[in-house]
Length: 387
Ligand code: PHB
Image (cartoon, rainbow, N blue to C red; front, side):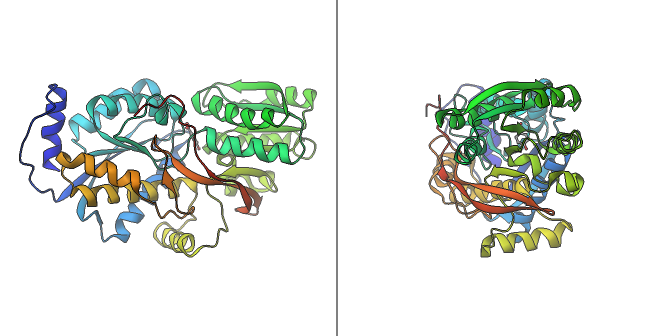
């Protein structure tokens, strides 16, 4: 993508109608910006694994181009995010940034991506703003908005007849937006939120909050935790003796990629997510087999999102032939694509977020076994997106 650098310079210089003859590119440079350390480290690995699995399935190419990689550990640190994405863009000269997991980091990335017209595919972070007020033609998401799985659980909880809930999460964008999505559906159906409890990301001192839950005695507890924090929360909830008396529900990150570590404490938990184990489609079975062979472990939702980020990029590159001067064609191709995801085929909303089924799953052994489709083809409302 040699033309890429020229156009980036042109954009930086405020030149929009520059013409140049782009040489046909023979490779694409992909920059992973992911949290390779900290509470979300396992998620980063799964995303990168899934992405590379798809590339390997295409003989090491995407859209006919060879693939080179660069990576930076973003540490789930929003304060370092602008510097980190600029390293990929300016030092490593990547053509596309794949990132990230943490919503606060993703929002800082989206600003830089928009300002520099760098193609960005978000393979996890659900920050509603990324496909809301911050939306841009060159920013796509292969995952979900924080609103989506949470809204699904609000629908399910109301259907099950629960009337009161306490919410508990980390005090940052993903937690807050997840709680809001749950609330929107739950209160619309007549449910009442007794209390919202939070603690700073990525802290895991849950004891005082669990004591408070025990004294409020809501019908259910709704939660957003993920990665290492989710492992600890589910264990502590069970150890506090709450699991049998007050059902714990959540966005499916609570039990995805975590079940081996959670063991008995997670058994029977109900969660909602855009992926589940046991879908038993030919597409998912082939994906799972390939992942298990390549990485000697089972895939999770993060692996699927990485895999689909690669699929989306491949579709765009095939249309643009990897020439940055044809970025409009790349964007149009992804916008109109149906992505053949292991989760089930999906399309993108106008704001570039997957329109997808939200599954109800139950933990059985080391599996988040699909129970039903909680909400069919759920589209994030994309509030505030103008494009
Ligand atoms: C987020 O910060 O948006 C986030 C992090 C981890 C997840 C899901 C969402 O598993």
